[in-house]
Length: 544
Image (cartoon, rainbow, N blue to C red; front, side):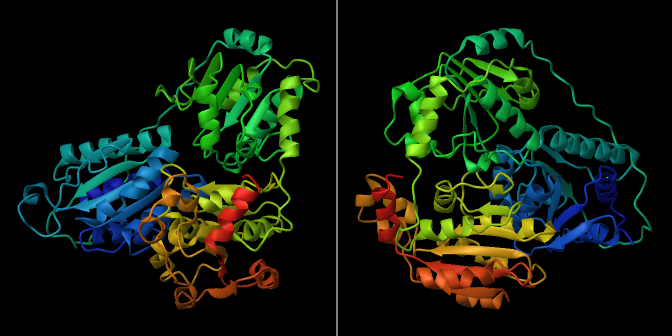
């Protein structure tokens, strides 16, 4: 049976009408009628995550894996505030997250009643659309509910962005007397197609001798990779791609951050094209800001100006695949001196890590070199993300990371959420601070048996030791890098994961085969204990 609340019935029925199946629930009494509605309708796949902060990041993992909208649902009060970090991440990563927050009746807000805060529009700076539903006490209010939920869901899907539906509920809450969800009006939305006159851009493209395309974070897309390969091979275009772009083709330059350690002005482009999400490399940003191209085109889905490199000349609201595929294909770029210059430097600066000391980079390399084709690899921010950039990846390996806000706190529950809906083994590399920050995400997930976590424990925030100036600070070890002597064994065993530990090369080699045995019906954590000083010395010695 379903709750009698009309605003709940409209919301849940419309989510079903839009085909949105995945729902992450956190327990509470005010949202109990919502929980009842979702769990009584077989259409929905419901996940229970008690902590709202973890629940929201868990949902982001599902979105990344399935590439479809996901609902999170919480009770009233500060529970909704716990969603905020993941909502911000979804906003900047352009992920379709749907927040449902149960609320108290409007007349009790700011009256010192229990669990009453100002929930309506609480994410105002990080949300695509926020609506506050009426309770649906008459036909006019019910129509209003329907309209507002349609507005929110259309905004979520059209912009691939988070939306917030706040649902005030007055007493009594627990009248579960409705036999089925109502028939509801779903407002169909047709997204406009915007055409761009390609000719002025094609003229510049044809005459530019130093062409460069920089790809930011991008979900796996085989079609865009093929378009870019043609532009690299036939037009002499330099393609710069971090692993986050999921464009790990041999024709592209992946170690450009190392190349730009000692920048050469001849590497600067005359024409720069950018699109997609975030870039990690600070050196690339600095280099282009100091060597501004004559033309910088940014391909975007909207009209918001993104001038990351301080050189933007053209903001082009278009689909990147459509625009790039219309650029004219000239003769082979095999003799293009600009591209050859980049390729020569790329080959000369490929580091050989086979003989380096036991370290974070060594452990990452050993795992990367043994990954099966087509695997899903999730990364925590900071060091793990940068470490894998030193190694070649097979183009079939898919990379995911919460790079929207670059925070470390939610990567563990994101990986768990991803694994919960993925049919294959999921690999996740994390540092110790990121892991311990969200270690309670391991609670009550014994049903997830396909997750492999490589935990790099260097007893603090390794990356801070490499920041010039900060590395000389007296407060660095204890207060910035958060030095500790904690290991993960007890938490991992309490979560009923298999636990492995390596503190040298021999132990790592021994345990990797067990860690990567995909027939094992249990999730596994391989904790690798390394030394911060050794990690930093390798970066300095290899000029990374």
